[in-house]
Length: 198
Image (tube, rainbow, N blue to C red):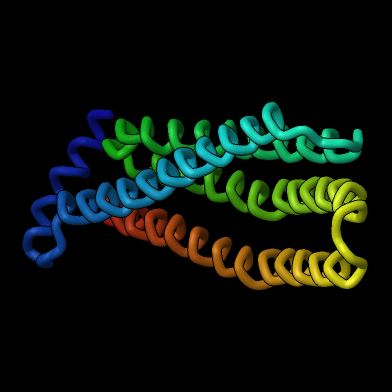
């Protein structure tokens, strides 16, 4: 730790000469981290509200087929899983502030976190999408008793189209944006580590 502090002081002096300060880089990383955690918190709150609404509907609305009840249960399980994962990620990033004192450790943490989020946004999102699709198919059984065949087909086409847009367009953009943001943090901290290594 003594070597790190000495290197940090050396870098601070050199950074002041070069016009790029250690504190400025860390402040920029902190600001980006705060924006990211705010976005995660907004996800947590919105999913929490959706879980409560879905639970209310599940309890209060009388469904006539067991397939709809199973459908609602699948949706609730998916939403609660997503909510728990977002809460855990929010807490992990929010608590990572102390790692900013050592850029190399924070870089390693962010690299591992970036891999975790990529897995979550790809593999877990695929399972999540499949479960929601199954739930909608189960709900279509009850819908078939109340709506015309044309309405049912329109609903199916609309739902399939929406899932395809979410999966192949919106999720790809989201993954790219999140990866770029995390990579930007890692690169900024990498520039600090490179300065310490010189």
